[in-house]
Amino acid sequence: MIKSFLARIGCLMLVVALGAGIWYLGDDVAGWWNRLEMSTSSEPSERLARHAEDKLQELADGRSDADVVLTQAELQSLLTYRLDPLLVEGVDEPMIQVGDSSVLVSARLVAEELGDGAPVEVIDRFLSDSTTVIAELQPEVFTEGVAQVRVLGLQAGTFMVPTMFVPWILNSLEIPGIEATGSLLIVPIPPDVTAIEVSPGEIRLKTAD
Image (cartoon, rainbow, N blue to C red; front, side, top):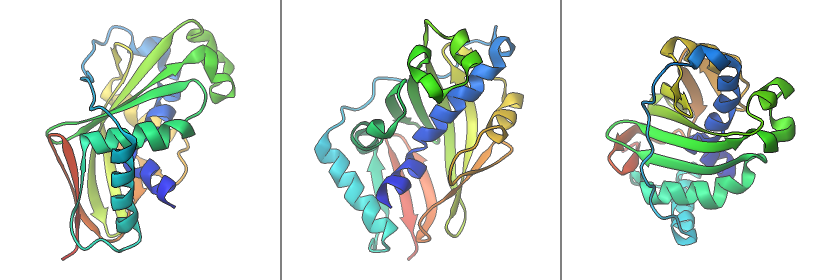
């Protein structure tokens, strides 16, 4: 339960899936300049991962009677110590950066190590290269038990994917438990969460009074 919940909140698998989608665009993204940049992330720790996991588990179980605040350091610890071991071979270095109103998530994809994780034509294009995929996300509560995550930007290496292509990528991929509509991802969340607030260095999951 908690691992599934963390995967949805962290959206790490979104980055992994989008990486494969970006490869299909190939030359269509050539010439678009770099826009998204990840700064040095907070130092993760097992202690912070356990602390954040406990808070999310209480929220998922309906035992939290206050807002749940996750700092960037806690979120990075969750990615490093809980989600990283679940990633497919060839995908590593997951990172998160919490900005003023949006979240950047990234992962490094090594084409030659992906094996069955990507089609043959995808591997052929990036056989000797590794690519860092970055997605800019803006989460908010849509209705009770449901959040929508807007994909504001998508980048592979130094190439920014044109906004018009983002819905095509999202709708061509299958992400378990997540529905894509346009540039939005519809994600299940605990029904007690009434709002998701993003501010520098932290995400606040507000709960019903």
